[in-house]
Length: 295
Image 1 (cartoon, rainbow, N blue to C red):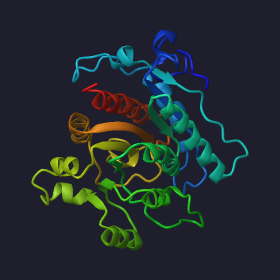
Image 2 (cartoon, one colour):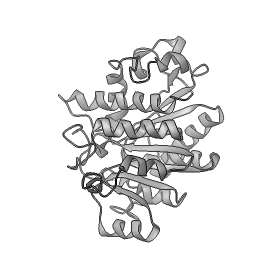
Image 3 (cartoon, rainbow, N blue to C red):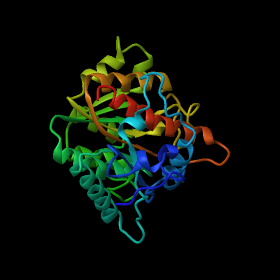
Image 4 (cartoon, helix red, strand yellow):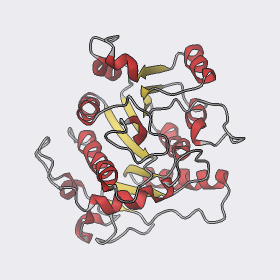
């Protein structure tokens, strides 16, 4: 595996803090886009995140630390999917993550469309007990198939549900009736966006934390955010999450649980709108700080 240098790696950091051997954290770029159904451009997401990250501050005032220099963050050369089928592409992602976990790395995957998450999650499920999958998303992604593909981005959580029943969803506000019925039948822990606003929960963030197992993998589709905050995504649904409430939740999870890894997907960069790229780049660093606050 080859890591990127200061000009193209995450945060634009020198070799001393971004070498693969000496870094505890590894960024995997997965520019995969084969099943998008509305807005396109997610294949450009990882590169845009890396470029924008060069303007993210190393110091996080909330945690009073420069995590990058304490733990090291290596960024791998983007995975190439040239001429590979969807199934072989997903297998390649899984094997890359699996190899890094064997080296005791903390793995962060940057997508690409959400379909990659079934491949990203698999090695974690194989190796970690008492694991919950926490999905931030506008969509349930629980369709059995979509547009004749069981590997569609709209079916990714259906594929993950075949691997584990421990799924928690936050921010959901768009789904078909089959997905709604799946949630009811299988008792998926789904925190609908509207319920977070209408007083269903006395403390919805506490409810989410309490619903999770000891270990947590986060799959973060950026369309979970309200489009007024992040419009550069394939299907920007109104009524989404905002920055502070999202980060406060992840901070609580990192404090009380063990965040073992995460992915961030579905950024579709828009020319002339760098704010979405920067927000996503900062999100990655903020989740890392939340995950390592006790480490």
